[in-house]
Image (cartoon, rainbow, N blue to C red; front, top):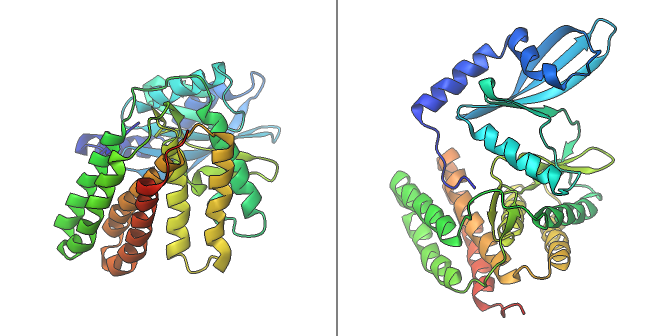
Length: 332
């Protein structure tokens, strides 16, 4: 799992140059050609950038034949060889019975450091706030549990200590960047360290690594799980806690959500723990609190002028989750 990864200047420059080059039809067609049916004769190719990050980008590629047939792909290109690792993990999941709802690449093009995916249309679970939400959250929890049961070791283990160190590093950087946040951030350090010492032993499992509502896509027929960039091998409670923290962050800071949205967390938590009874509820609470602390750094870095609105509710809920992790009876 990539913990605390930051792209270098050279990588940032390389990915910008690659994105500019892959704005042309010819190289895009060469990337997706192996994913086209043998009898498909391309007549036109168009690309549109869907997302851009310091070390990667995603482009939608529409290929149309002279007869009007269309094939649509997502091309995800990287500034380094990280896509090769994602491709390897994807093949492991396919070969070991991973959930069919995982959105896995159909090809990897080494010379372009690019993965090719079939395009999927749908609504992000994070954008669905109507009566469908509770059942879709239960489906998301079940899908996460099935991923965690796949018998593979996709990466070297990521330990709880590594994640705590990353969170503490973020807190230190935030206190330097925004000194006025130091008192509020400092109050979270002791509860985090105390809860860390209370963690239950865990059987490691393959994890998504960035589980949130935005990573699930509802097609109208099924829920699809996207993006294995952060996949790793660790306590599966991490995924569950991360998802709950991301959902709670939205509930706390988004005034457009319905008043009962906080109850949605129980839909996911209860379903997940019922499907994975050997996973420690204490550990889920710990990673819930840890992720909220990490999100404080992310949100305040992006919107420093709003830190007085961001920190108090997230810090309060982080302390509450860590208190649960400290006091909850150990699982059998």
